[in-house]
Image (cartoon, rainbow, N blue to C red; front, side, top):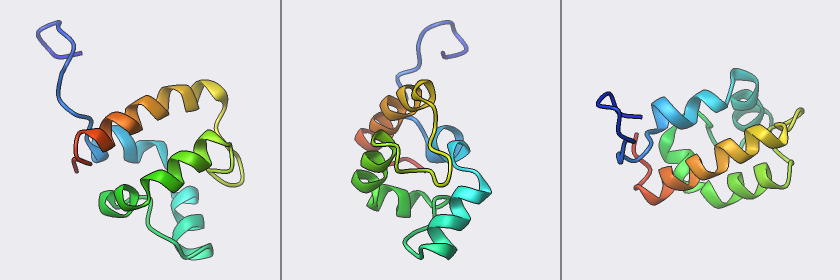
Length: 89
């Protein structure tokens, strides 16, 4: 919600809206243990959007504890909006 009381039309940003969903354990797993990409870099997450989205939707990610359904349902539309808005940093 924008400060004027109307919903914001700005695309979500990685730093404010997406990155906070991934904690240090999630990042370490994907970057250092699996060696795929950095969940704290907007460019890595954007480049791996389809795989990340599918893994979250299918509860294969984050490891070892996938999110509850309510968190997934909140995250996926936001993640889609971020991607559709051009993966804003």
